[in-house]
Image 1: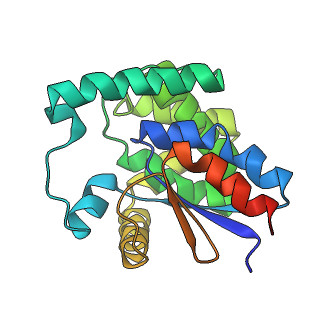
Image 2: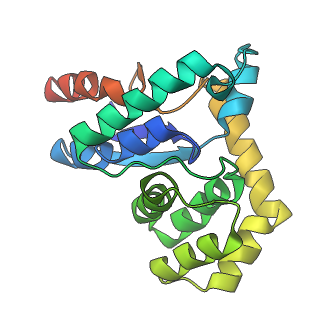
Length: 196
């Protein structure tokens, strides 16, 4: 058995944000670590054969979905504000920089705090530079990294690896032979961990 929970997420995913407000503490409670795997949800959906419209294109669904997100945020006592854009690839690529710096949880926390907690525009590079500054990193080096073809290729490879493991959306958490999808599955994860 592994002592690592694989966490597949996308900064564009509000449900991944909600899951991440709880998952690190849950993992620590049972002596587990989290392995962070950023993905591109639209690509993962298509790779899994889901060619349907996005939630944003279905008015009745997005209305209920936003209400549900607000309920979850209230339950977890965390802020929730829909961002101005969902174009977050550079933020996802930045996860690999954070992994190198051994600051992954903190970086993902900060990304989610800004994108889904504050509702900033993630296409504004100043916001990304400010995030690097908050992390104590050289802002220009970080910006060069996330825009480099090498780092973006690494992200694309990680997305394909996730798809090959059956990842079709986010958040998905994996441990041993178990797979959980969605922030509303955390109780099931705790139930599983408590019996190990």
